[in-house]
Image 1 (cartoon, rainbow, N blue to C red):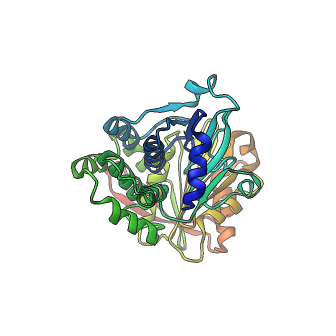
Image 2: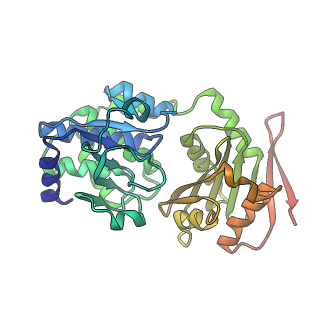
Image 3: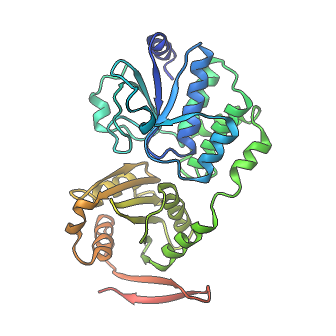
Length: 351
């Protein structure tokens, strides 16, 4: 953390309206990070408004807002009130990263744990903190520690929840900083509230999404690819990708969701040689965009480009990812969920 640079940011924002903008459709890590940064600003006597675009579509996100009294305003609520003179701090994302709407304000700072995008290299941020850690909440927790600001119980609980969610309970992309911040926050959290956040992560209707993913899965060597043929929230697609990764045979998982506006991809990798962000970016090159961490990433193909996938969309996408991974064997294990609820393993030769 650049403490002097952060103090400069604070002073710059002192007489300006400041907005903390998360990536679109914010998850617990984005919400916790924004909430923590807002509390830090308040400790300096500054007000900051948390904003986002898209929808809060998961139970866990809604629980966080209700439990901690977090106020977040959507783009539709703020579009007419933000001016070019207002300050925007991007958190858990970067301007022009592909997952954030360009609001009317002036992006003066970025705090993020995703790989730095090309645009960020050339953009003149007043303050920039981009570091490779498992969760953005870990960076904000470190701010509390190094600035010697004691977090409230609610703030610490929100930050710790964000860390646990983005690292998949400390099993994905964990760094020394994440572990150290867990140790730092644990003395401040509310155990009951943390437990309340971590139960009932899905609702009954989500089961049909998991069923569809199981019905449509193919396994090629260590690669598992599945699709969900009806629209569902981004975070649910991510949860299904994590579920697919739990299969013993799979080290790389690709799940895509069919929507009116195109395809949404969620990619996971626990194979050292495969960077999920690089994989999805390469596989979608010329058709869409994608990127992210080595362990988890996402991407999109807009509806206008879907015709380029041809009449056999599923095979086209399978071939794209297999080609990027150098997997030649097109024999897959196809699993279908029978009406009885039993899983039937059927070997299907796609050649």
